[in-house]
Structures are given as structure tokens and as C-alpha cells.
Length: 204
Image (cartoon, rainbow, N blue to C red):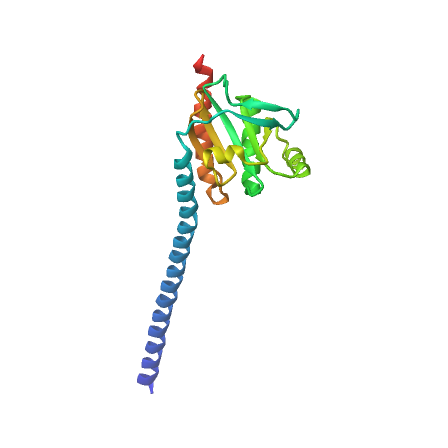
């Protein structure tokens, strides 16, 4: 009887050990799969953002006639930059709202502390919607209205919001297509833009 009890306890022990390691293995597998899924989730939008940037970087920006959102007068834009670098933020009706707000905050801070030559190209058709968007987001820098998409068509831009760093000769030096999954990447780009814009003070 004692022998049977001993074997029974030993069996229970080994069942416990096997169950424990099986559970641990399954849990580890689930963690690894989750990490792989997250990697894919972030890798795909990053690769898409890079591909979009490569399509427009080094393109020359042509001057355009756009409507000033404040004065409602047509202006010939981007033909006489006074800085080594300037920024253009493009926002459309289909833009990611949190991404647009983040880019606007960044540009507002720059406008207040570093550079006045920042422009927003607003591709929103409705007059009421445009006014509301500008007011709610407290855009401090100059806004041009582009309801018929002339600016984006010229450069072949298909996704917004997009932030362009442009040099004095109107060449697109770098571009950032903002996505909610790429917050850390956006910060790196913002730092890079800041360093380039600092050269404005060394330019003259």
C-alpha cells in the first residue's frame, strides 16, 4: 500500500512538472507571437512612410497661386524664400486627426520660437469646415487653402498629414508622413528638422 501511495505521489509530481513547463511554454509562445505581431504592426507603416518619402524627396517645388485663408486673396506662393530652410504642413479631409494636431503643435512651437516661414496647405473643401479646423487647432502660422488639391497633385502626395522640409532653392530635403503608430519616429524627424532649421541663423 505504501509503495502504491509513493508511486501515486511521484506520478502527481511529474504531472505537475509537465503541466508547469507546458503552461510556461504556451505562455512564452503567446508573448513571442504578440511581440511579432506588434513588430509587424509598426514595421509596415514605417516602411510605407519611407516609401512615400522617397517618392517626393529631392523634387523641386514649383510656385503656385493659392488662396490665403485669412485675407482670402490669391498669392503666388513659395517663390522667394528668405531662409535656408522652411516648412510646409499638408493637411486634408482624410488626415489622421491626432497626427494633424501633433504636427500643428510642433509647427506652432517653431513659429513662436524659431522660424516664421511655416505654411499650412489645407485641402478641405467645405468653407465652414475649414474655418472650424483652423479655429479649433489654433493654427498660428500662415494657412493657404487648396480645396482642389493642386499642391498635392503637383508633388504626387497621396497621404496626409505630411510635413515637408524645403531648402532655399525649393528642393524638398526631407518629408515626414505622420502615422499614429510612428510616434517615436516622428520625434526623431522633428529633431532632425530642428537641426536643419537652426542653420537658418548661420545662413546669412
